[in-house]
Length: 449
Image (cartoon, rainbow, N blue to C red; front, side, top):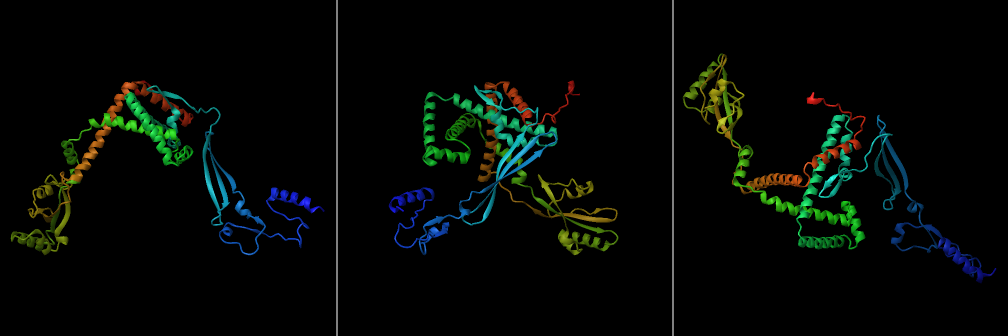
């Protein structure tokens, strides 16, 4: 055996196949060297090796074994033939930290399969705003989950009404945003456009610098945060700033809050800010026959100038004769739930005064206002309350002025086409999301019959 010629070849072959250094028998003087093989875990690298150094390192199979993946399919089939397929995956693997088997469910979403002959509009042009086309898919992408949920209502009429309302609301918001943005861009002077371009370049550089320093890292960060690319994020910020600027210049100057507006709102909510007092109404009611002595005793005590509560305590009335609380509005007690006789006897009473005896067939009663309770109030001159009322009025007027401004933009840019665009979008939504077999409408006769 030629040891000098075969040893290098064997060493190279062994290194290429298993990254092991094998010594050929007989090439080294002495007895045959025995190899030691043992499993090595992550924890073994945190401390020095004890004993002989192994020549063969083997990683446990559990650490390198790929996780097992099990597909889970749930299929729901409706009576009309529509099928909803929901897919998920169960991933099972050993956690290296805890050495425990863990299973995680990854939901891949649902997929709807149409039956033969069912229509599904993929894309459609609804209209144009300032030359920019508006596609139905752009609006449906934002509200698709809500529309699909509403379309599952078992009542076809309710499903259609809910879908129509969701689509109309989304369309109006889209139109408002596009109109305001178009108006803002049309009012930019050449100098303002140059300044806007410079600001956009700075914004893009700042966005990239704040999210890793490279474009790839910024793209990945924005995808995770806002589901946007760098260009989409910069465009979103540009549209937001242009919209804010045009509303600030066109709407805010029309919002004026006067002191009379604050007084009017305070007066409307006077019951909350300055509530009226509550009267504690007392009553001594005695039987003419079984309590005749107490009746005479009350008459005598009141004639002697004793208070109502003293007379009530003398004849054993509970809670010093307290009967009920009565609300007071504009200085008058609210007694609408009492009979006319009691109203005539109680209404003129002031705190501390006792009514004349009110006799009925078997009883006699005296009434008096034995106390008042005034809830805490806040003056209109309170600074914090004024700021709160002004802020609320300002927000209301700002919404009103913004609505008027948007209406003026609709008349100038769209005219009557906005109603046609909205009707077209609603029709596309019905064809796409509502089952035509369930949405059979009865034709209305002329004259509403």
